[in-house]
Length: 153
Image 1 (cartoon, rainbow, N blue to C red):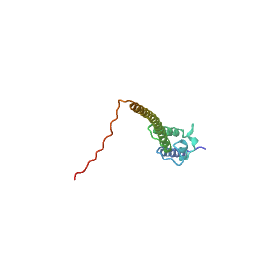
Image 2 (cartoon, rainbow, N blue to C red):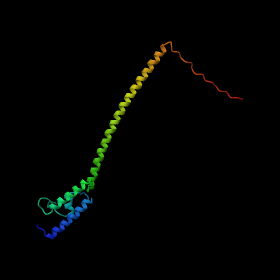
Image 3 (cartoon, rainbow, N blue to C red):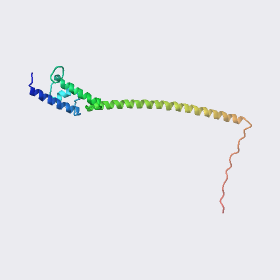
């Protein structure tokens, strides 16, 4: 069915208004910043945006504007923005987890080495004490005397 020039202008105005709303992030429930939602919001058949149909130039304009927003770091679709943010957060948390695991491994190795050194030092001390007991040149010092301090009357 053919539409009149006035109807086509009215449809284009509705499409542009819907396009502006979507690009400002005003998504309908369950909608995205895409052609399907644009067609639905403008009450226009989605197929009119493809090929040589009457609103193909508006689809191109919409896609160009969406890409321009994305190029400057803005994502008009709040769900897409949330997905992008969560993906970045997941990457950051994975990196943090990997660093934590590496630190734990390093500290475990350090603890193992420290315990081995302490055990070796203990063995050396025990060996030296036993060697000192068998040597006659080593004499033991007397135990310190304890003195009682009296009070004057």
